[in-house]
Length: 453
Image 1: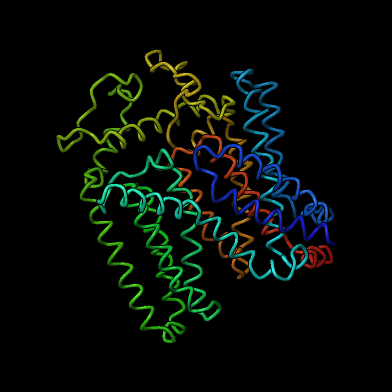
Image 2: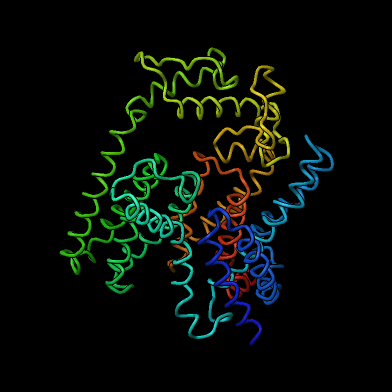
C-alpha cells in the first residue's frame, strides 16, 4: 500500500511538471527525466489494476497500444524509408510509448484517487495537475511581462517566438487549459466549487485570450470562440443556478466579453485573411493551376477579389488538398513522423521543392500528416479510443469526465488545423489519448455488473 501511495504521488507531480514544460525549448533533459520517472511509477499503478485491464471493457486501451504493433509491422513490411523509421522507432516512438503508459496510469489514478494517493494529496492532486495544464500560459505571461519591463512598451504583436519559437504550443496547450476554466466556472454556478473559482477562471481565461492576441493566432481565437459558445449554452441550460450569483456572474461575463471583443476586433483588423478567407480558400484548392505550394518560387495567385492570396491560407489549403490526393494513393502511409508528406510529394510531383534535411515537408494539418505517415489504420487506432472515451465520459459528471468531454473535440479540431506532427506533440497526443482511455475505464463494480448481465 505504501509503495502505491508513493508511486501515485510521483506520477502526479511528474505529469504536472511534464505538462508544464512539454513544449518549452531547451528542456529535453527534464522532459526525458519526467517521462522515465513517471513511466516507472505508472507500472505500480497499472499492476494494481491488471485484472481490470484484462477485461474486454478495456478494449480502447488495447486498440491504442496496438498502434505500436502496427508501427513495427509497417517498418518491417511497408517501410518507405527503413533507416529513418528505425531511428524514429528507437527514439520518438520509445518516448511516445512511455507517455502513453504515464497517461493510462494517470487516468486510472484520478478516476479513483483514494486507492493511490495519501489523504493530503487526494485533496490537492487536481490543483497540482491544473497548475501543470496552466504552465504554458503562465510561462508565456511571465516572458511577456519581462518584455514589457525591458522595452517599456505594453503591446507587442506577433509575440510568439519567445520563449516557444512558434504559435503551435500556445494553441495546443491553451486548448487544454480553457476547458478547465470554463468547467470550474460552471461548477461554481452550481455551487459545486467555491466562489473563488470565478476569479481563478476569469484570470485564466483572460490570460489565455491575451496570449492568443499577442501571439496573433487565428486558431487560438477559433478555439476560444467555440468554447465560449458551449459555456453560454451550458449557463442557459443551468439558469436556475445563475440567480445565486447573478451580479458577480453578469459583471464577470460582461468584462470578459468586452476584453475578448476588443482583442478579437484588433486581431481581425490586423489579419485581413479573415475577410478574404472564403475567396482565398477557393483559389487555394486549385493546386493544378497554381504551383507556388510545391515549387516555392512561382508567384502567389490572386483570389476572385483581385487581391493576392493570404500566404498562410494558401499554403495550408493547397498542402492539405495535395495531402488528401497522396493519402488516396498511399492509404497505408509512408511511415515517418517527420515528415511523410514531402517524401511522398516529391515522388508524385517532380517539381516539388527538395526536402531540407529531416524536414521533408508537412501539410500543416496534424491529422493528415499523421495519416500520411501511418496510414488510415494508424489514424483509426488513435481516433477510435478517443471516440470511445468521449462517449463513455458523457455517462459521468465528475470533473475529469467533464474535462474529457470538453477537451476531446478541441484536440480533434486543433490537431486538424495545426502543424503538430513533431516529437513532443505526438508524445502529448498519446499521453492524452491514454489518459482519457484510463479515465473512462469502467470501475470494478461496473465491470462486474456488466459481467453479471
